[in-house]
Image (tube, rainbow, N blue to C red; front, side, top):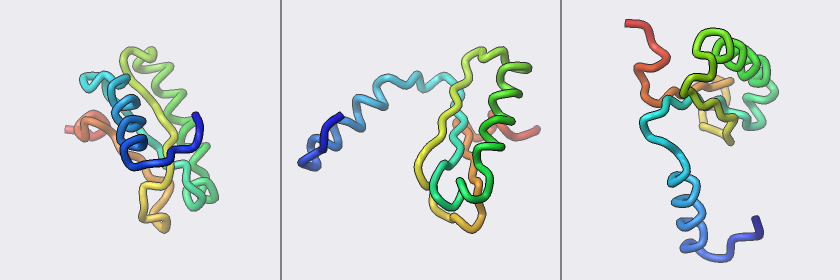
Length: 89
């Protein structure tokens, strides 16, 4: 990927990425920004990989390390889509 030179190129790149994602497939994102990295996000990612491999058999669950989610002081941050996917009850 080369350098983006306009907002239109950024929007196209964003749409290309979103177009490859199946919205019906659960997604777990773990912040990999500087603050979360310093707070041990890779241990969180490894734990999710293990659970997904053992419990879900990678059966339709995507796991991604992302850039900063904000709120660095609370990291490492995890977001699940849909929200109810990673909550009990």
